[in-house]
Image 1 (cartoon, rainbow, N blue to C red):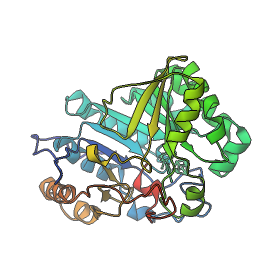
Image 2 (image 1 turned 45 degrees about the vertical axis):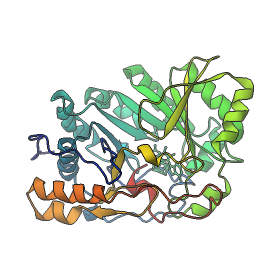
Image 3 (image 1 turned 60 degrees about the horizontal axis):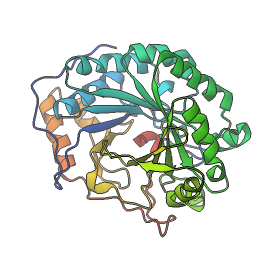
Length: 341
Ligand code: SAM
Ligand code: SF4
């Protein structure tokens, strides 16, 4: 890829109307994915035409503008980010901001199935921490949840990622009757391999809302069940993120609870997202945002883009509209796979 933009003088930091400083950006690099997870894509996703997707150069330019606005952490996601050709080049290019001291880290969220061929190059490109989504260790359940995925591919991917030295967190969406009953196994699997785990409440996002809502489990119930077996010690919150962590005394490992439905964490929200088509989503749980692509494709002025981003962030909603007492309501008809989880 050829690059045009680099970080110039630091601009005014992005701060919203509730004085939340935005220093974390997630970028969806593609809406495509080799899996069809029930809670995310369902069976028949409609993908964006290729011309609607941002090019790698456009992603680099936008992300760099965010870095000048004070973004310190960047997460590449999707869709499946490793399914996007040139992803490693993009990471390598964006790493120049780490070298310049303007960015703390670039991380990746992946389903793990394509890690074997990419892990080493990704590490060399400057990525040090990855989140790998893994809901179950049962190959049949795994295939059912992911719409045909092979668990063995992800396990091999994890081995490859551990071998090159990534810090790894497993992400598991907890679903009644699917994996809620086997979370202990997943935690033991992770902690024995020096990986942390984050459990996630299902959110009513996208078209597979109904089944997702039916399977919603408040994580307080899961925590109670785990606390009957293990001693869970609360860890201080350092990330301003939605995960609340404990250390499991018996394993020494970290376990996170991400509870968008049952507990609001919007007060401390520090993040925005760029969807695969250039829409800036200022809240995952609402439809607010602005399409940056027209401006991105019509002007060479980074300043104009910076102003559009600042204006959108100023309108960032105070909080999402999910309602834990009615997990079937408040669903967002926006695709998680193109917005970027
Ligand atoms: N394909 C990559 C993966 O699966 O890790 C990255 C994109 S995926 C959209 C990012 C995260 O969103 C995954 O951890 C996935 O489990 C989570 N996710 C997707 N749909 C969700 C939903 N309806 N509720 C909660 N989490 C969801
Ligand atoms: Fe693909 Fe990730 Fe969505 Fe599953 S959760 S369908 S792996 S984007």
